[in-house]
Length: 139
Image 1 (cartoon, rainbow, N blue to C red):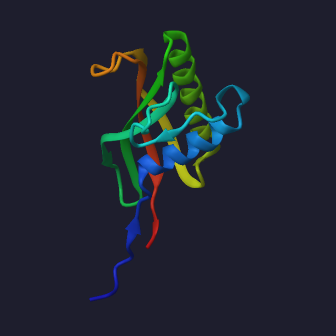
Image 2: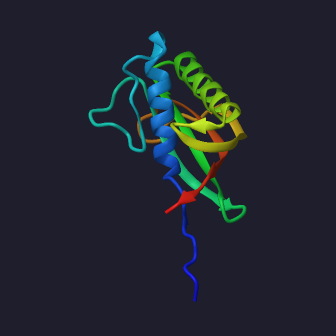
Image 3: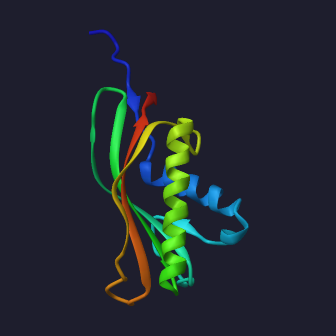
């Protein structure tokens, strides 16, 4: 049996964390805003959390995970702006063809940013859902 070529996919959560973390750090308004897959401890006033919530593999080399990006802040207007900036940064990366150095075919908005306060703390939180088409690479 011939050796089959193995295609592996990057961790989509980490790709978005890295992309948004470095892009936000380059904007004076958002310097110091942490981006991670978990709620930071201690909990800061402003932060972004990225979570994989599903998705599909469309072919042998394309993975299309569905991710939720949550923007937390103390004010609705601040959380809304942070969510809008994250959306713009993801869409820009999708058009450029790369997110944090990972080949990206597209970023589609599945659910635009919406006000959905954290049910446990009532902290302001805007959430948005994206389908991100990432290209695999040889193992």
